[in-house]
Length: 255
Image (cartoon, rainbow, N blue to C red; front, side, top):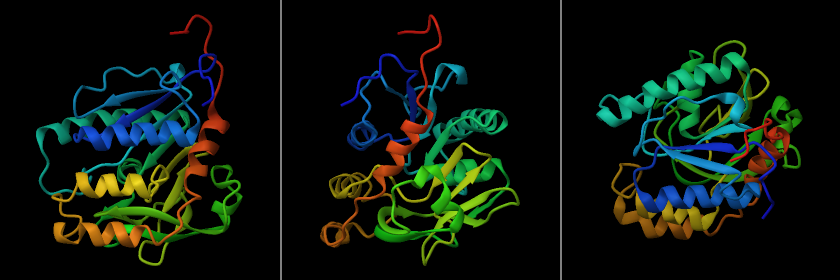
């Protein structure tokens, strides 16, 4: 694993109440992005308030996925609080064109911030999906080194139905027209999970079997089906994001 003490850390924002799933997400992003716990700090928003975030202290922000949907009809007090906190932070990242990568839930939060239509029209079941890059995606540095078409793991209840003018669609799948998009030059969202390998997906299946993504009785079948697909390209996105945006610590900001 690379050393990260001379660079400003990245910040992972987690919305996972399930501790096993949250820890697995954190470990997977560190592993695939070649970061250690000094290079990737974490705030579990379901456990604590976001608090003030000075963007200049960070190399970039990653927002992980989880059971929240911005289009949910019913929201817990915790979800409402998390969404209020994210509105301000994501607004600042857009205004400052600050490096941001939202994974799954990031499509809803970043999309909502720019006025995209987010609803359940293009939901996808849990498992592997074939993703195709648009021409803009194939030229974008986030996807450098990736094939024009690749398999990824996902599963989501909401998605972008319509992007506003100015947002750049980067990837799509047969059942979900917007699998990735960019706002400005440096804010990204992917509908699929770049941090998921098959073991991680199986962990998520166990953690969220009662959250309405699938019939719990099909869990083992979903795991078996996932193991039949070769999902190797998506973690490149995490490495590209870190390599592109990692920057030296500000003077006096070593911690």
